[in-house]
Length: 403
Image 1 (cartoon, rainbow, N blue to C red):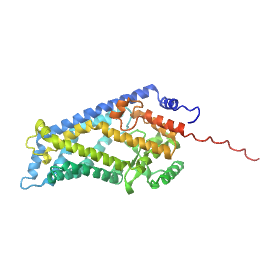
Image 2: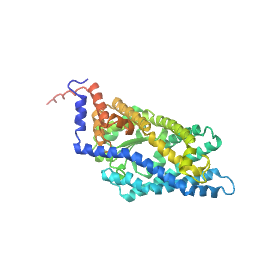
Image 3: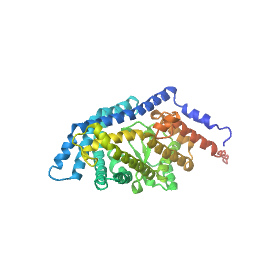
Image 4: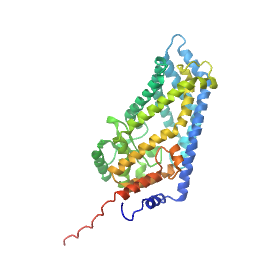
């Protein structure tokens, strides 16, 4: 350990770079977000219940299958109509949680019209994806009624991998412009890091993330030939220095090199399997309580609102487990950055800039329940512990030049 260096004091000094009022604002935003999880689940349940009680899906399914069974077409039509109806019913809540509140906390500068346009595009893309996935699930229900939940959990895992592959090519360019990092010291450093760690060096991009959000962020997306690392232009608008960029990109490289996309797909696939098992058992009870007239067994696509209600509740209950999976991956990516890039101060400076949307020092219970990343305070302390354990040699003074 470096003599005279105190990791606890260094961590406190980093967190103290923000005034108390900034920490209070971040805490209010973060804790308010915890309540959004509950209210969002209730809004989702209410929306699905209203759609179920309206009987519109029953009439639609009956119309499609009036002359002969056409289960695939019935599923596609029901899911598309449900997606549109749910979008309309939940739009006021979505606008509050996803746009107005972000504006109130200074986390977005996007106009309401731009936000609405992106939501409509999300609806179209989401409906198409949901139709594909639910077709597979209902096919499993029809063909394997006793074990459909096993096949469906597997389908979810495969579908997640598929979305990882196609998202950078087919989805993300619809929302943002991506361009290579311009020539210069930043790009040279990133390319060198990429080559050292087996990451495609031509896939280091900058995107106009400030179009949607003022958050200081970067991400890794894609798999195989579509994998890439993207940095929001917000990083550079907030004066990220070279050490910060290296620390952050090293973190994102960690996700890629450690194969977190596959781990997440497997973990969420297992969770989906467990969820479908519970849905299989709970569906008759919830259908009876919800009062869906004309809806048959779980194989009837008109009963999808019942599945949606169960998914909303089970998803809320699974929040701690989902967040734990995320925290483990983020902590591992931090470790990779420290081990392979060795920029603890750069990473710490970058983390401090994320406090505006993620309170720095939650209680342990709050972190376990609600945080999908380790708390900023604990992550900065990890950086400072690394710095203490791996002191860099002092740079010797330059020799005087000959006259």
